[in-house]
Length: 513
Image (cartoon, rainbow, N blue to C red; front, side):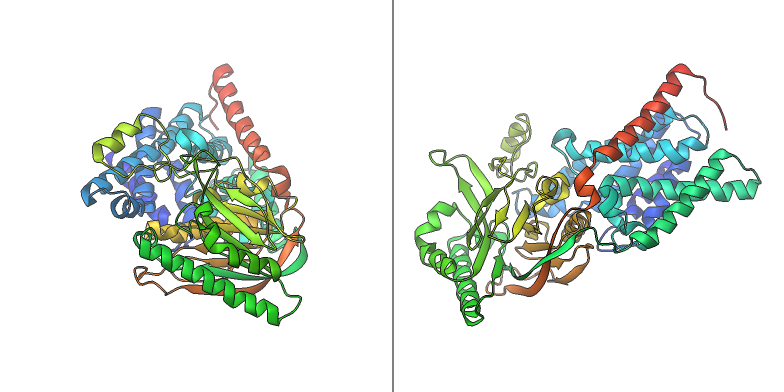
């Protein structure tokens, strides 16, 4: 048992290599299904601990960038920030522990366990992590499929949970086929596996880079990465630098648009670029706002807003002006980073004397649009939720993700975040613009491929070091199959499989293969 625990921890740790910035996607095809063989013949109690140790390896190495946020921006000393990050990893590992535990309770001790039950429970664990205890939809197995020729074409068909299932289902069927050849046996399940593998690989060639949406209009986009650190931005000097950069870019692009008659440009600024309540800037910005209305220039900028007469209800928002109109407010907030999820944790913040977050969630998931283009938005963390873009999938032509990834420093965090944004573009079959404070900003095409990107600015304290991406892209109209059906069908399928195993366990005797 001790050896299995060590192997499980190593497998979980190595799975991190399947995600960005490492991107060894083959690891994601081998390691998860390997854990099945660790728990295939052991009891539920031992499976629980093997799952927990597996998760611990994944989360300790996969999200240790959170320590940077807690230490550098949350006010915790280094030892406390490490301990808090470890506690989070220990908690998140419980999802794998319960997944493996349920598998041991429901397994039939035959090949159906490998092909159907284990993949379904894995996906169930990922889905629960999306919303349980405020949610943490990070490091889903399906995200590793973006650059995998065989799996990437399925992304706009079945979404993140669907490809996560396939990442376990297909290797499981291949293992069954190899075993049947080696042991010289043949039955209906083997025929099913053979047909599944043939159909999968055949479909891969057909689906790779298939267009589910249509070309719409050319859009000239300007993506701004200001490279002003958090400490600097929220200071008086940083606020001046932000306003100065804001003005200079708008004036420059306005002059460019005037020279090129009939041309329309959209400028994208990152999350909370204007470090304060937007209404406080209106007098200062009025001349700029008036200028953008006269020329064919649209601007989206991240800032804070509050409802009139409710100064304490602050929203993390995207404001638009010029040829663009509309406001988008963040709905999915970062637990502990933007709000305290449960009242109990207020005592925790008081005890450690941490900075207490006070952003309010909003239901204002609105399109930002011009007379011709509709932009569907997501702010920072909420890009990890596929529902964010599903609401406006039918009407949207372009996706936008404004973020503030300098919380994560020069770690693997921004790379993982970019990978998630790329996946959302592929799911929807539409280009995505990503503007961040200090990187990684990018323009992503409908296949989830990065057309152009910036690097992480490791010298963010040095202001006036901003980066600009200027590109003409083609917006899209229509919907991918996933944007039409959503995640419900695949989750219902997983639920049906699990309920079938549960029913068998309750009403029939175990039957060995």
